[in-house]
Image (cartoon, rainbow, N blue to C red; front, side, top):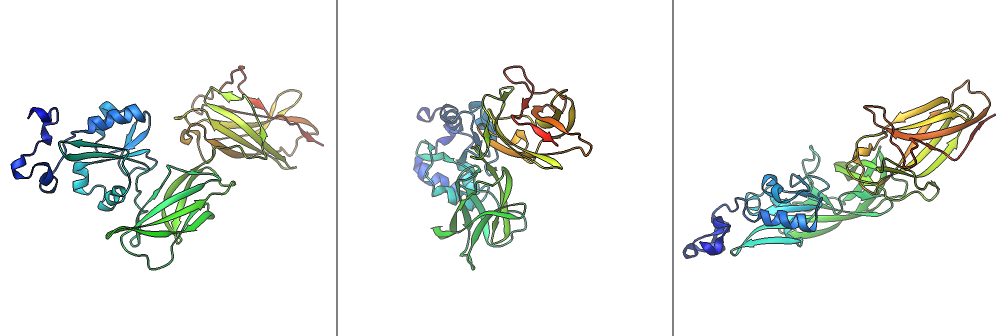
Length: 356
């Protein structure tokens, strides 16, 4: 058995078919080879998010995030021999990836034990979708504002009507596209849809619909400052969140301030944004708003640009004069403000509100 060290369980008697027959008659895999998978991922893709049903076996060798094999936003998907033999999480999930090219594979003594594929994973459809699609897979972990998004939809049988995939937010269609249907094998069909996201799409988790039937959720992210925004430079709070753009629109009743924030790192806590109307002479706070917005900072990823609109009501008894707008962030649990490199815990909008 020495040639099989240290994976002794990978030995199968060649007199009864050995590695050629074994995958068809016995369950394979007690974790053999997953150490190689973990080491490769740690070496080549440190800090990424992977999916595998054998997290406890991979974890000693990989320091990144490990989730279920069908979780959303995976960077890499690991298929293992016993999992494949059991058809988990579904036979169609496995059939789909078998038509993709693995980025890494582990063969032990003539038997394929593990394969690593680029994510994301195939997602199950929303509960209540009883007929038609059986899963879907965005080809990127999230949709990017002003760019195209390709989504594969999995089917077991030929759709009976024309199919259109759409991405919606707050009952508004952001993008839609028909599908190009291909046969992966006798048991699996895939329709591929390419959506073009508009520049006005908002960051957040939105819904994919197939012919008006909810299919699943998808995160939408932006990575640019809108071209009509005023640019802000060198305003970074705690080295974590940068203020990179702004826009304002005053009215007699409220002041609209739209800010573009950029995440300087991953894994941020949920900070609260404050936007305040100040007396230009005394600095006294006269009105303001505190909010975490619809896309809280804990969901941001490094370099993501999040555009949020804030409406500050103008006090009805506000006297004529000059007023300033001040913005910043703070910890909601303690009220402690985030600080810039120059020691300031705020930023003054370079504009004066004049009440006549």
